[in-house]
Image (cartoon, rainbow, N blue to C red; front, side, top):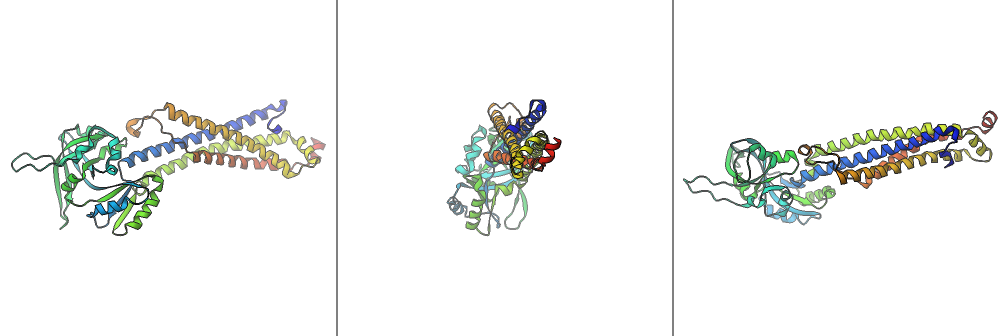
Length: 409
């Protein structure tokens, strides 16, 4: 602890020591805050995307699934599965007379909590229950009645210039089951609900339809395209997927959200690695300032080292003094950086003083997800860098020759 200070006439060394610790503090705090924000963005986007898309799907290589009630009952018994619902997926063009757009139509079971729980949270206008209404075809000679109601995103509603209750038309290509002939089918629908998930690509392209109406419109009465499952914890995704693949072998196929979103997951992972590497280099610069600081301390304490060695101090003992000094400096800077980073994360999460465009990111302020494991990893990396930086000065201190220092010092 005495060697952390310098004599008054060489106070420059104490100032250098102080700023070395400050450098470590700033690097650690920056890395902690950036990792927390990156984790927050990833968690926020994942929650929004997965709220309106399946976490796990059971599909069939043979196409449609007819015994979906049995599969649904078996799947719900798997550990960590909280809900199961059949679905149909189709593509088409949605038009209103004032606009047109390509959409992906998802037929969902309105009576199933697994199929509608998350979607219900984002409904801004209308009601989701309107999708369950099944319209009877109009008698011959009368104007055609709507096939059913749709739930569309706010961005798509703006593009088509429609509101709840307005009529829209869906045109979709249909592949015949018997001869594989491609035909087009169209039907009139009403806008039953408008939602805003915050995920722009979902709000622009995904349309929800009641399962019964979707089966009738796409010509799949009594059949569905698959079963979507919701699970208790996303960390259990791989384990649940493995259990389902064992329970439903060929011709069934089980896919999870990680496989659906490989590009997005890989992109976030790469961004975190790049940001972490850049900021870790900032910590490394501060840590390796320890080399200069410790070398100056060794030069100042040459006589002290020589006297200690003549009194019986070993080279390992001298080396340990300067290694410990480097660790103390690194530890003080790291702890201060973790505290500053934690305070920064708290301030960002509590006061939201940094604003971002909501129409792009779906949120108006930086999301923060401060993980204890991130703090531990940053602390470990910082201390390792400080330890490595202290080796060379400590080695040089232990190689001092007491006789020469006393004679010429």
